[in-house]
Image 1 (cartoon, rainbow, N blue to C red):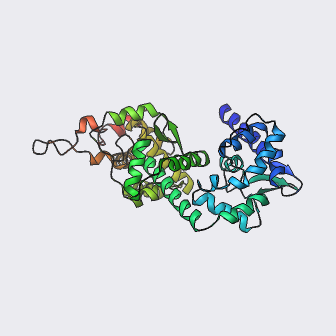
Image 2 (tube, rainbow, N blue to C red; image 1 turned 135 degrees about the vertical axis):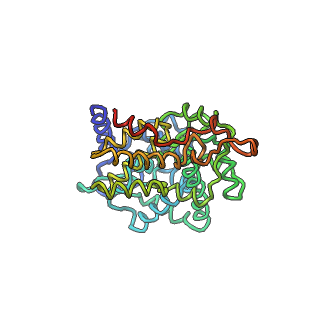
Image 3 (cartoon, rainbow, N blue to C red; image 1 turned 45 degrees about the vertical axis):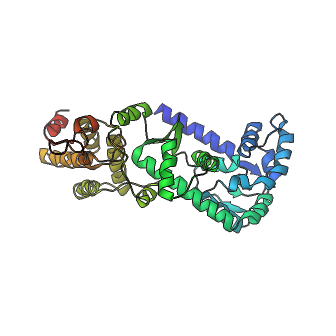
Length: 374
């Protein structure tokens, strides 16, 4: 509770620091002049400007104001559709839009660190302002060429998000290889890494761990890596391109038939709100993905509801076990436990060794009694 309060206090301080007070919509130099030297340095690094790092704050702000419009394509050519259409909307609205809370604070900070849009408090109203110098340059650069680059970037970013949704972690070199397969095109590495790094800072959904990219939901990278390495006979599940694009959405949830059945049971027997149901189902799949013991998973889930009888507990236990056996797992590289088969004498070479490659497919035996006893 204390940690949560500290986090909220830090967030509030950061938000207050991010929104700068202005008497009117700021020009580029006005927006830059109220930033700290540290914030200006981040902008300098975003544009890869060299030879000006030792300048004092006022001189650095002036130099950036002169150089940024002429080099705006360095940022625009790393955009995906979300950021591109956000900027187009601001330009269409005359260079400013009211802040309606649609953008997270990290996304707003990314806009500042790339000197495109500045969060400005004007007459006690919060607006996202694009200085006129940036508006004019954006209009000059906006066209078919930029649009094609943005679409390519969007496809790269979405495919990466989709792969990590199902696999949890992947080597960057393997991601590039998969992108070649899914797009049917060669990947220009320098452009790719610039697009990737820009998206990491904006979305905060994945992060680097050595030579790996990691989904932000992964709590223990080393444990997952060891689990995947121990199952090297298992190939990455061959998702279709559309499956990965679907899974790339920030609010995506793989609503399997088994999850639907479990959810429908809760709707029929309990009075949960939709948000509560979503949270229970998400908690369930997250616990499965971090390889939590099934008895513990059941105990965690049933602790969120009243259990009037052993029959109800048996029903819930059975449905949770079905979800466990049919959830695509990071440790299985996107496979379901039920898809991993035991080797047989007739087909020893064409199947995966169940005992070494997969968590056991669970049955109901003992689990209900174990949970009830706890």
